[in-house]
Image 1 (spheres, chains in turn cyan, orange):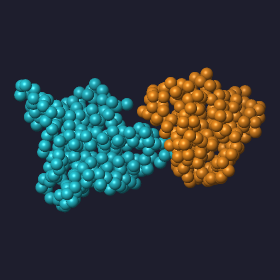
Image 2 (cartoon, protein in one colour):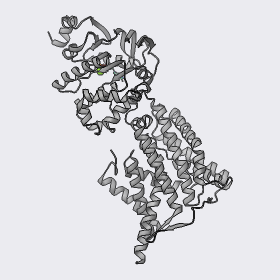
Image 3 (cartoon, rainbow over the protein chains, first blue to last red):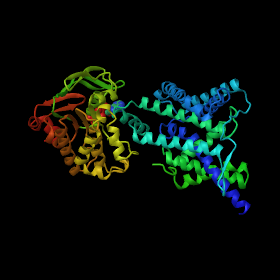
Image 4 (cartoon, rainbow over the protein chains, first blue to last red):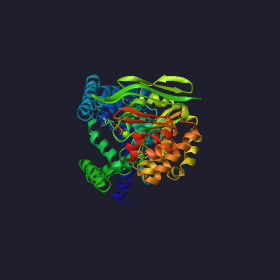
Length: 291
Length: 243
Ligand SMILES: Nc1ncnc2c1ncn2[C@@H]1O[C@H](COP(=O)(O)OP(=O)(O)O)[C@@H](O)[C@H]1O
Ligand SMILES: [Mg+2]
């Protein structure tokens, strides 16, 4: 087999797996921005918080990084509910969400980063796990377990959340809340409570995404910023509010970045990613699966 | 069991603008009462006050639901709906990007309604076969008549004891108006509901109403104790029939 075909297949496979990780990073924004109209640019900071929880769980208590963030999940959920409550009282209730709301989340991003720098310093941190390092050799290509494990857990999380949204009363209310808050009250649901739950879930996903991030690469406190543009691009590309669209967009972006990095060099990757975004939106303004 | 609504000496408005002045009315158990009046006279404001969307500045709104009396003023909209009072608002307010069945299931968010979803869904589909055909379609893509059917069905999914409907005829073709009014009567009978319906369309409303009130500039101008009394009233003739 030719070397370039081998490269191509391996780039495709790692792009696909990387896409699974991007889906985990984006799903919180797909909820907050896509379903609640909340531009939470601090989401990457919560993901970093998840990475450091995984780091502490792993380096201090010797437990698996993913398990560490699963244990911390209720705390992240509560943190998300608290963040929404503050945002609601200070901005949303006053019909003032756009610009000052954005500055609230920018502040949150900044505070979290500074706290992480003061606590952990700016050194890169990493975790140890049996699946970091080895690959499954499947003849045609290698499956790096470091990417495969986050991919699988991420897909399980997306499927779980999708089932929750489409099969529970609270889930359906979350899908409805941005469309007509007053009408939701007429369904006997309190939209503020619904949004608080949804935002708690959104931040909960950041914990797991943080574990995936530190499994895939060493992290330092400001690394989350690299993901802000990419994450919003994925959500818009997929179609706001659609998880399946978001997953397709995440995988498309992962594959595109991986192919460009392999054949053109890593510095081209962002240009190609945003090129895809622009072309898709020109053809389909509501995204791949936007309603 | 009996469910009724008593509004007493209600004042309400928007900010400094007073719309309703000293409004009193009653909807007895099992009655269908029409709230009649041309555009801008305060029908919607009254309905919104009952539903906790507009805060009255004076007066009281008491609802008796299955034998227990609740004061509605000061309660949140979601609490009022949870008591068993459903509202079909002006403009229908469906969730346009959700499917017909998702809209119906949201109607059953109220915990009391969740146990009877299958039965209520069957009833809605029986009454509005069109909704069954369109169950998987997005609500926003349906015609005005279908949307009005869905709004009514969604309100019923909350298993209410009392139903408030704001101008069901608005935006519908004449044939659809009479069909919608017939459906309201059918739902009322099928579910043993107490109904308050705001309408501009006097002739249609009076077909199914037991009684009615005429509201002019935010005051009750006339209380008709029967459809006949309304029909024979001089002021109404002047207002609606140009006679
Ligand atoms: N949101 C609002 N803010 C200010 N004034 C309003 C508002 N809604 C209605 N009004 C005014 O209240 C009066 C009664 O309106 P409304 O209750 O909607 O009447 P109707 O339903 O009988 O057409 C009108 O003069 C209208 O302009
Ligand atoms: Mg009105």
